[in-house]
Amino acid sequence: PKLAGFLKELRANLNGRKLTMAVFPPLDFPAKWSGFHNVDLIGPFLDEMVLMCYDYHRPGTPAGPVVDLEWARRNVVQVLKSVRPEKVWLGMPAYGYDWSAGGKTKVVSAREGVRLAQKYPAVRHASGTLYLRYSDLHGSHEVYVADRETRRRMEDLARWFGLKGVALWRLGFEEQQE
Image 1 (cartoon, helix red, strand yellow):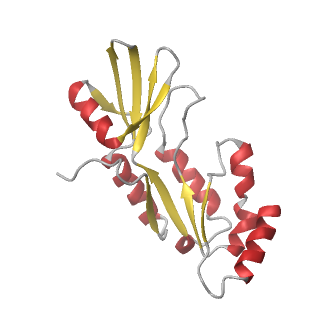
Image 2 (tube, helix red, strand yellow):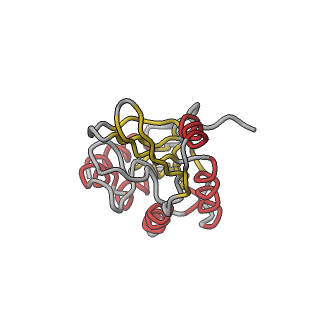
């Protein structure tokens, strides 16, 4: 409610300029974050929002995909219950995570993930991400990365729901054009 009050006051002082905000997914995401971005409360004060459909698995969680296409779809459906589709951008990742046997998690750009997939056997995971396992001097690793194909499928999802478009996190992490 405090965020909604702030956005209402901010909007009143923008002199016609647009107000856009990135929001956490409402479903299957830590409540301490998603609860702060209650789209039912803040949606009326935003011209547009970016639904950040990434970090489904992240440091501090078990190994898994940074995005799951079904999870993203369910979150879009939930957001569209209170926000018109032309106000919503689908945030999509150009990265993933590498979980090592020692419990360490590190960010892997899509560029780096595709290079790893050329070196080690990779498969398309049920989540829509690229998945591979490998071992090196530091032990065994599990890697889930959102690559070009993952993002193409997310773009299809955004079109299917008539969303405003897609937003990439993080520019520079994506693979090079062929």
